[in-house]
Image 1: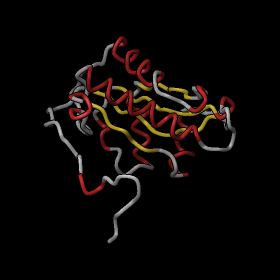
Image 2: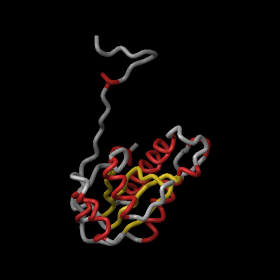
Image 3: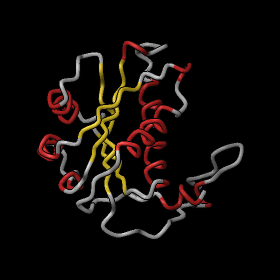
Image 4: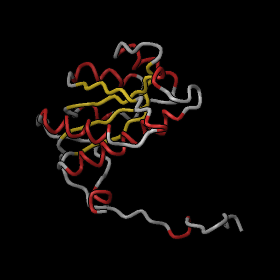
Amino acid sequence: MNTIYRRRSVRKFLEKKISEEDIRQILKAGMAAPSCKASCEWVFVVMQDRERFQKFLEVHPYATALKTADTVILVCADLNLEKEPGEGWWIQDCSAAIQNMLLEATDLGLGSLWLGVHPKQERIDFIKELCCLPDHVEPLGMVVLGTAVKEKSPIDRYLEDQVFYETYQGDE
């Protein structure tokens, strides 16, 4: 649980290179995620050219972390690999991959941030062009990586009033 509580969204990074081995470990963590019927339709585009990935700031108002990030991993789905085409399970599969990647980055002592691409069509179109994605490859989000400028305190977001047993009992 310690890694889960320590995982925080980081938006400012030091000018420090991430090792190829750490990037590989983060990618392996993403590929260790569960997926619908073991479809593993995820595709990863590793970007280390800051000029390239900073262009995403044009369509994403909350992407300022890209200004100082060392590496960005775009997480996509190859829709040709879906076991149940058109059902949209790829969204959950790629989300699980992103969460695993964020946790592995934390475990490696790196800062990270999940930047959403899907479902904003303007962002999807922009990133597809930027990364030369074919029509059957759909971007879900970006994992922004670097060495955090400052460490954030662990956080426990457990809210007892949002937990129900057997049936929903809210709104009373």
